[in-house]
Image 1 (cartoon, one colour):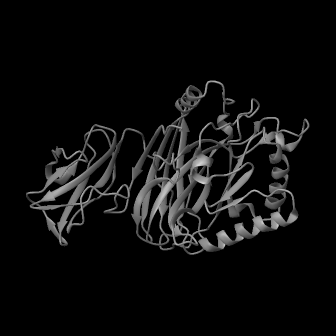
Image 2: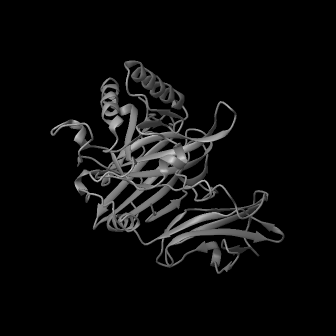
Image 3: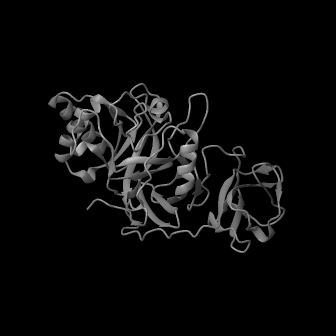
Length: 387
């Protein structure tokens, strides 16, 4: 799946736009008073350069990520070119790390008001990714078991998304023809992956439901006190969705962000069901994933776009811009024999989650889902705190 447009906006000073830096370790530092500007040639970000903590005001040169010298007067960066601009500074023999400034022609939604600015005690949710498909014979029983589980717990404890990735079915209205589950999770069908850390695929016994619940409860408890806050302000108009995601750190860490476009109410005959069966209506269907980390020998990894390191209590933002017709055309161009049902705009919504790195039982560093929220494609979702 091709990303239509997604822009990193870092609102806390001195945060890199990704995990790597152009410069090496240096006492020369560059920060910007804001990292999002309009690409009108008039709006600007004011840069500040320091050496060993002392402000430098003369003889500073600025460069882009291709080492081209930039013409920046009075430390004010402006541009008429939309996109991500990486800027680093040199002074004498010193060079700085790079920062990112985003220039955009798209109107930017405001961050929703923070109901508790001094707090970092956020409500925690578990991300449940269901891998399924209408042609999967085991999925019918699996869906019933999951329904039993979810009806016996607070639905606000989790964010649910269904990835229809079972081998091609002519009656699957949300088939995703890409290798996300195989390359990232190595799942079998049917499966539910919890926070990237546990794959649940048992579907025959009540014991398996108890096992599933225990993992949901464990992962939710693990997040208490460390789950990041996620606020979303989005708008949908003229076949375009613009969503500003703000992440507020509960602890110092490097965070990544992913957004899923979801649709409810899709109709498709699930195998081994009869007409009128509730399983023939599919909700929380993933229609688009925006959060590709890298493409390489291991395949695409959807661990999210980097926000860099965010200090506790500080925030970083990411702007997702989707043109629905473009997503649609890209999908059908890549798989002419697998045409989606056209989506219903009123049934669309979003799920947003952030990932961080933890160590598994073997001491290896792995990504996991730090927190997740459900959000509208046309409205505000403020930070949610524990009462």
